[in-house]
Amino acid sequence: MEKLQFIVLTLVTILSIFSDQILVQSQVSLEYVRPPPRRIITTPHDRPEAHPQQVHISLVGKDHMRVSWVTTDKNAPSTVEYGKLPGKYDMSMTGEHTTYRYFFYKSGKIHHVKIGPLEPGMTYYYCCGGAEKEFSFKTPPSKFPIEFAVAGDLGQTEWTASTLLHINKTDYDVLLLPGDLSYADTQQPLWDTFGRFVEPYASRRPWMVTQGNHEVEAFPIIHAHPFVAYNSRWIMPSDESGSSSNLYYSFDVAGVHIIMLGSYTDFDANSAQYKWLQADLAKVNRQKTPWLVVLLHAPWYNTNTAHQGEGESMRTAMEHLFYNARVDIVFAGHVHSYERFTRVYNNEANPCGPVYVTIGDGGNREGLAMILRIQNLTHAHWSWHRNDDQDSTVRDDVWLESLSSTAKCKGTAGDQRQFKPIGDEL
Image (cartoon, rainbow, N blue to C red; front, side):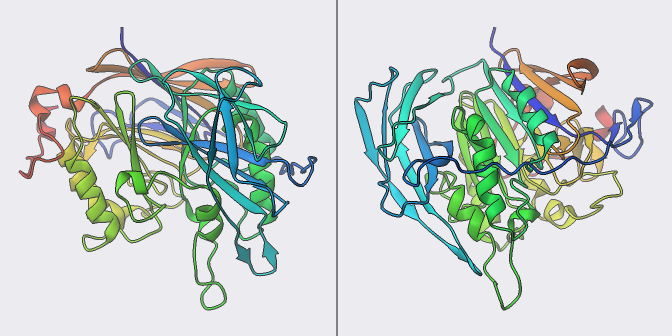
């Protein structure tokens, strides 16, 4: 039986589950007292200058992977050797490199190498820049089942370590991160410590990320260019998805089309991001990718007092595109809580709108795991697991039906007609 599984590990402060009406809090609620923060983990670089550090991988197109890493040796080559057996590399690719300056900080040599074509569901062994240290990764499958780990607002604290340890217990295929990676906040060495901190995980499974407010790192006049560190270190498949910016892109994996949007770049109807999203949704084939998922940073629906209304302008500009395309699920971060809304459109419950889920604070108190199992092309089971230390308890679960298979919600991304809201048919 085909299935899709999402696993989300992040912090809970307040759980508010909305069922029959979008603006009415249901009887199922849980008051959560946030434990105190824990210290930042600063991971040192203890390898020779020419050896790779901060190794991470990301999906590129149908059957390629991008391998990224940093060296302090400016003469280290941007090459990756790889193969299907440990220590036996019968393939090699050369890529590109870059560096950047941020005030008095100068980065190491940042390498990006695209390798492939690769076989689905296969383990590959690789080394970077001719160094002896061997890494390995497993490519995602080409069809269901597929499993995603989703973690928002990660950081590099002791709570982050707990979150990643829980994630690592699952044999997930791809990690999705809706913004706020390192929490460097202009302190550029924290980008380096973050890269080293996540390397044991990000070097073995593809991490697909989008930016949050902590990636902006811009100041008027004195440093007016935003996202310099983020765009230099975490290159995503924007070119392959027809995007002109690393801040928004899309990709297909198995039977899922995933769109990563930028909450902190222009998004109005005249913007490049809006026009790209419009074109990307028009190309979606729900026969090939029956599930359509979007990630962004600032949530459009939020009952928490924190960051209230910060996603409203983007929602007003773009929500009708989601609705007309029949987006199934939207994940957001930013707000340090967990919330799951019923299917929503234009601030009203609507069976043809997306399910909105907020998953902020993966780097604070690890408090939950969410699992979405797509049992087949039409039905999925969503469950929320509250984790306390070693234990995990299901506290929320619901069955979902793909909008591409729902008779009253039939319509594709290329359909130009406006769908009439049918919230009263719930």
